[in-house]
Image (cartoon, rainbow, N blue to C red):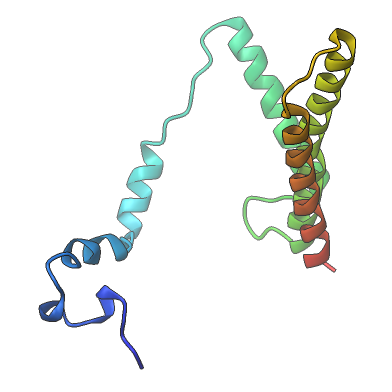
Length: 141
């Protein structure tokens, strides 16, 4: 077979402009020790004030309830749980773009001024998220 990628060829045949690429193309293979060390020193924000603790508790409660509703488990997650998570998340993802486009549209009507295409950009984003949802639904049929 044709060996055209720099990491597949003999290093002595590489030109001077190809040698720096060789190191960039090879991915680092992580050892178990390296993974454990990184996870051990993983930064997690510790709430300081009352409002920090309230926001943290609120987000943690939403996260846990979302996991419970979709059937997500940290180990051995069922495929249906992943399907539900993707469908729910992609369903919610299109809402901000659509709502922002609606508010921009109403503002433009209220002030009778152009918004110079920002509405269309926001609607394109909402359409993009809708297409993600359709792809997910098609993939899980």
